[in-house]
Amino acid sequence: MSTDGLPDLTDTDIKSFLETAPLYSSRRFKLPMMPRQSLRIEEIDSFCEICKQIRPFHNNVQRSTQVNKAVGAAFLLPVQLSTGKCSFSFSCVSCKKSIRIYLVEQIVDDGTLTIQKYGQLPRGGIPRDQTLQKFLRDDRDNYEKAVICLSHEFGIAAFAYFRRIVENNIYRLLDLLLEDLQSSGGDEEHFNAIQSLREASPMSEKIKIANLALPGHLKPDGLNPLGRLYQVLSEGVHNLPEEECLKKAKATSECLAFLVSELASRKEHRARFKSMIGEL
Ligand SMILES: [Zn+2]
Image 1: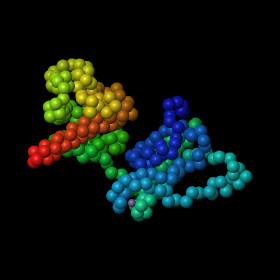
Image 2 (image 1 turned 180 degrees about the horizontal axis):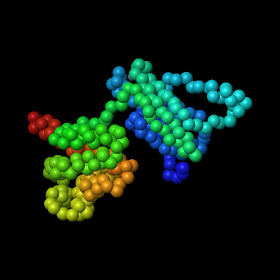
Image 3 (image 1 turned 45 degrees about the horizontal axis):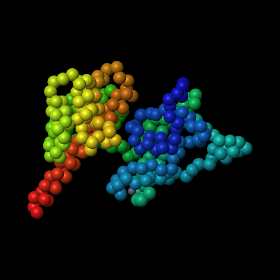
Image 4 (image 1 turned 180 degrees about the vertical axis):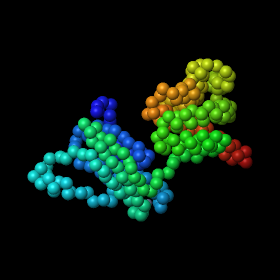
């Protein structure tokens, strides 16, 4: 098995794997250069249901020294990870009451390490973006299916649902954009660009227009989420490998969530400002 292109295993990778990887999903790494005896890490972050906020959770299992004792004279030789299973138990540093338990299988093969999560307590929630949920209220069914597929890392299905969501809701998104441009006195060029996205034209043309249609405040670091959404519409799911689809599904979800929440919060601020000033 080739290790080309595989990331080195770090504590940060293990932490994010425990925190976010769905049950039965796996990740592949290069075996670390510095031999490590186990996958043990000391801390993760999680939303504590008792403290009602994200808290650090500390490993509450005593570090084992048994392996070193057993090898006796070879005590100083570093031991590298081997195929097996391990469990993790963490508790919230604040309340010490809520716990997180994970079961992980590791397979070491020819310089590569594959880890799979096969157990987790409590059950992980499926993250839904509330603003997006509200915006997609008429397309709730597709959005539910999309987030469920995403949470299981079913990339092809997730991408297909998100693509459908973009297709169904792109005009409503353009309406929100126009409204935002109108009330903030946005420039005419952006206004005309958004208008022309409503007209029939080849998708390649629309991607070009969408890439120029957003004002600076909707393009974090120059990244244009509207351009990305039109790109998604131009791509078929066929031919794309599972992993690529998963990446695209996540990116689509982020682009939609960013645009909808930015536009919604600007709208809310405008309304609040108007009602305050109106009373003066
Ligand atoms: Zn707590």
